[in-house]
Length: 253
Image (cartoon, rainbow, N blue to C red):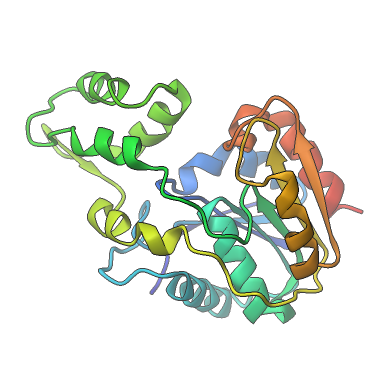
């Protein structure tokens, strides 16, 4: 699949993969700063953002899509950064195409399987009748009844766009993502990767626990883990300056 992507800056390529329900726009602010040092490529994963939709969805397909983009752009010796679901795509890509990467950055996700925990998000999105909503504020009010976090609500609302006058639509293929949620939450294979790897976790997030660290160090022996204080799962949005400093500190040395 030909993925939608945006490019900023020049130099060594840095490819950035968003997480579930996200898209490349979520990383624009960070990309502008990173583009002072790198050729930043922001990718929309299939069924997200401006990339095509498909009934087929799996980590292997997402890796294959990314490999096609690498081939099309002639990318090599890249830094690959992925957040959440995008982090699992990045880890699997590194297992299969380690020769194309120089460094790997995984943001707030482990290699393990996760229990289902998106029910309230899915309920909130399903509660929005796209045919009845005429102003975005109505959608926000509906989400508020299901999702306490304002940050998560605003993150989801970025996916709503005016398909035509008076008609809102989601930029994500919600039905397929919901159907494949068990696979999205599944673990990645146990295969060692020798790349220099940085795991970034939020102190307030429960995605990478202390007991997960041994497994990550077994799979990625040349890895380090940085914890950003006061941040949750969307660590890059909640602590942007420290996040950028952490990424550049790892990449530029």
